[in-house]
Length: 216
Image 1 (spheres, rainbow, N blue to C red):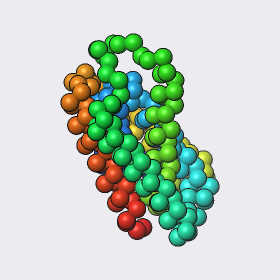
Image 2: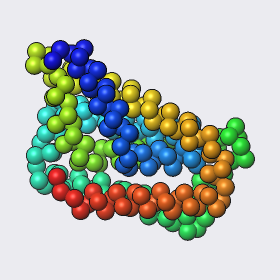
Image 3: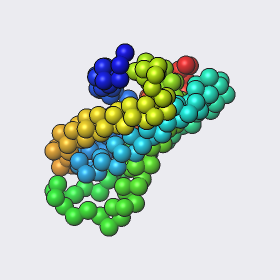
């Protein structure tokens, strides 16, 4: 397969994979619902930074070592599951206490003074969720080589394909965030917000338990 043809097949596969539900989708939906489109941007960027780093690690061979090492795989799986459980329990607590993100009076309300800290926190949550997922390592090792012609350099071509995947997923996820963010005023109502926190927490706890329990 030549590279132009493989790019089209790769992009199609990325679109289909990106649409599948998981921790990334749960984080983006919650963030967009409570903070609007702008609030979801750092989460999306954090997730994609983690994805791109995994792609580079896969090209460099480190991801293959993680995927092949039982100890490394289990350690990363436990860390990833633990972080998802932490996020889920934190959302449960916010739902129970009725203290989610501070509601804004309207979509155009002034951003809080600690916006930089909020962005960094959201970015790091997305980054850690993606990077602490051992399935991402196994996925990169198995997925990318299918679309790299034999005559092309592995690392450089993987880096290009990863940039394409990141670009596609940013467009898709930000489009989703924009759609959900239109209803952010409704989601920020106290009763709705508590229910959203409870549901989001339950989803992340369930995903964390599944990650901890499942094997390769």
